[in-house]
Length: 226
Image (cartoon, rainbow, N blue to C red):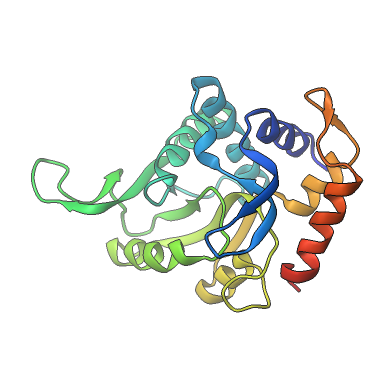
């Protein structure tokens, strides 16, 4: 496993963004883990987060893209901090763009988008926190495609939960890939998280012990993607 992935897993735990216990998800599923990207709130956390996204995007998609698009609301700061990090790490200027939930009808920046305007020929990478159902893409992809003649290169999320999406067979990232025809990826998968944290001290304690590992295994027996 790449060094930045190991560091990112520790970072999620240390930032109290990736939690373990018993949680009821929006889908109604009872999960032994929960990830809340809204937990990154300090300047140093956001700086690091942007760097991890930038490294994963560079590793997965290379440099041949123009715009980072972050769907409102959580995608807005993600696209901003990642654009900053990409410039600092790789010396490449990429633009950020996000959609508005409500169209702005006044001022010089009126319209449905924040940040850079999308232009014909732009190559776009979508950036999100975590995709469990793919629902946000249903709203976002048509907006992006209708704004200009752009190519969506791929989607990057922070964590692939690796559980079945709406179709009941494939994980949400695979459903998005098959539905829209662009690649999807994550900084880390839940499999990598478990592999790295199992019986390993983090912040002075073992995060995933045998009991929690059994609970996670049971969860994936029921909800894991095929």
